[in-house]
Image (cartoon, rainbow, N blue to C red; front, side):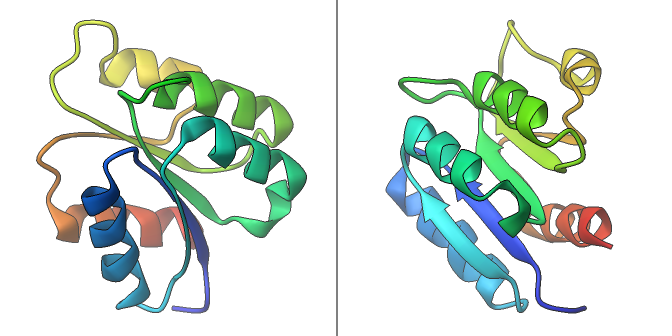
Length: 122
């Protein structure tokens, strides 16, 4: 696997750090952001720097889905993985219709998340 850059977005610092360490241990370069608005601004400044985005759904400011919709307007081919706990507002079908490539319910199996990211970067 070559060097791929992942943008990890989660307002829970411990989760974001865990994901950063997980992906770095597999050779990814990781940009970790804990505010969805900051992550969106970073993405808009340099949309072609990222190979995949992994985001939480429930965050203050912008939800993961709201952020993803703007990212997909900027760069329609960016693979996005959305992770969430139970949600009545969003499910696998609605996420797919938005153009988000993968959807995981928390707690997320780390191996499956890595596998999905590697597939999307290939």
